Length: 152
Image 1 (cartoon, rainbow, N blue to C red):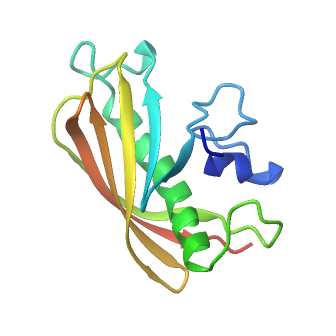
Image 2 (image 1 turned 180 degrees about the vertical axis):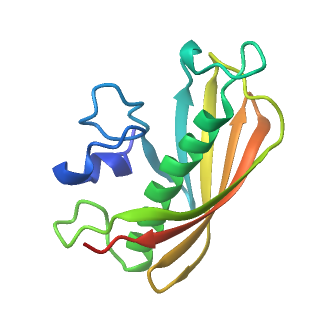
């Protein structure tokens, strides 16, 4: 498996609940390239059940899109700059400015979900990413994110 974007995060950015390798209770989401798109796979544990039995809580769906989206925004920005994450240069960390989610059908628990990102555009510090989340080849949610390069 290729190196995950999140595995290139410096220690000070490795605490995220959704994707941080240093968060012992987090999900440790891993995103990587799949051609021109980004992809992550995740199986939601049963404690994240929503209002429909055996299906995922909507906030979990949004959080998976959020974490994959910001990692994807960074990956797209690195690629546009002719760089690779972990190249030793100044790290580019992106944060969510907006996230729109459309829930298309209940998302099942206990099956591997596929989360995908596709670049819509880059303008200065802003990256727009189209997102999708599916299970067993069926679309469960789609979204669009505006991510912004974090400045300290």
